[in-house]
Image (cartoon, rainbow, N blue to C red; front, side):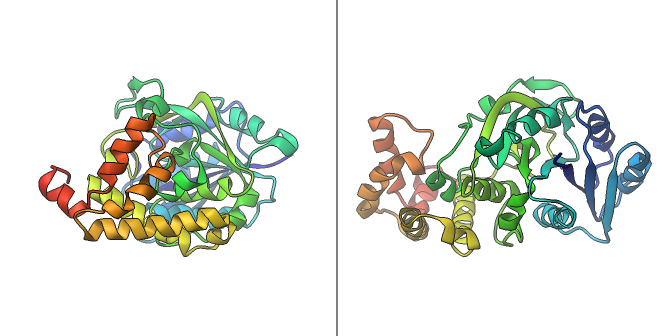
Length: 318
């Protein structure tokens, strides 16, 4: 029977952490181990974790100083990898969410379907505020996220998966680790790694209450400007090209990624890019997966030929 391992990175999480840990106790399928890395907390987070060692199979590592969200999860996964077999299962956890009781049971079932099973599964979430009030029944609908994304769309920086909703097979760690330092967020990287192996599957059922409270490390609370998002997308594309996953892309995917990087670099330098319109139209469904219809793709291709300097100066883009 595969082992279920939860990976949790904490940092100054005293306000919501007890609710999170209580929701792990309430799971209909108990986890076999919980790898916790405290990222240099200065509040009572570590004391809370110690109190729960009697109730949960916690394995706690405490860092002396904060290293950041991505690095903390990467380190946590490295610790977890030491005692896991390929078919064991890993679920990522955030300190301020609440897991619904059947999360482990639901996602484990999807990953236990034999040869047809994907390498990763993820569910939906209810959105809650800082007081635990439900503000939306579906994270996916609220954010207008597609259940799955093609490889090319992922290469441009689109992501539809939030780490706290996922469970994946431990064999993916061979591809995931080490997480490149230039990758902006860990769950985007994990999704790409899963896509390049046996894929991932979206489950409609909510498995988590995802808390949006203004201090989230990622998610709705971390909104960035238009130009900042594009810069992050370019950083992501370059990180993928420089990574070991680049060799797993098909020839056409590698060509697309290289062309996308070239396009983005020109867009940051130039006011207008009319010569790129044919390429933008030809690849519009990958660059703009949420857009439908010929007119919609044409409009986005034409706007895509407007350089970032011009758009930020004259079109009100930030």
